[in-house]
Length: 241
Image (cartoon, rainbow, N blue to C red; front, side, top):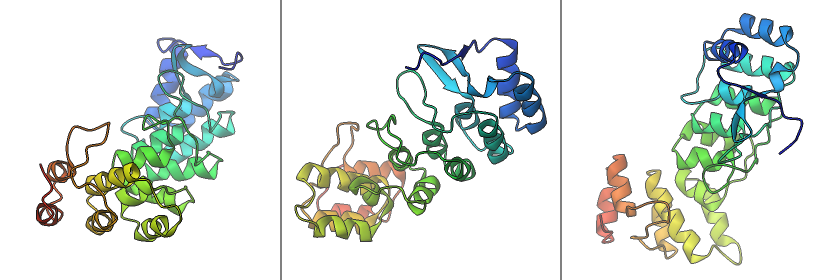
């Protein structure tokens, strides 16, 4: 951790005011606070064990704050680090959080301002913003990240039903390992992607594979998500609930 990071108690008056201005999307009050206290845009709310940047607050659950892109730009223009990481149990950036909240407007602004689209540290396997978005089925931000140039791995391609990417994976030599194919099959069912699931099954995927993070089969996952179009085919290949 960098020794020059400054922390601010969440209960401090200025912390309460700046967080409130961000959350209600109040650019005038936010600018008044930031210009009135130089360096405020760079501080972390919290302490050395757990803290967030102001950009994390602007992209925190459930996202979609009023004037979100404008608030983000003000924070960066006044010194906020667009790639600042959470301090604590993970090192997610604000781009991870925007991706996890399906907040396309915030995501676009962060990328326009220089956010690292391949930043690691996500709660999903220490991965990228795309890993977060596809795992949480935040499909708008997942697809926008792909459009903006994010690297698409096998699991993202399966979840989003990106058939061209899947076909390229299996055309390469050597092809994906069996565990990855099984995992991708589960993710295709997680994302409701029938064509992707069929292709993966043809490539030898285990129709009843349960990944380490889950306790349900692909069929059970599809049922719980309401993907009725997947169920007849999964039943036809004797997938188990």
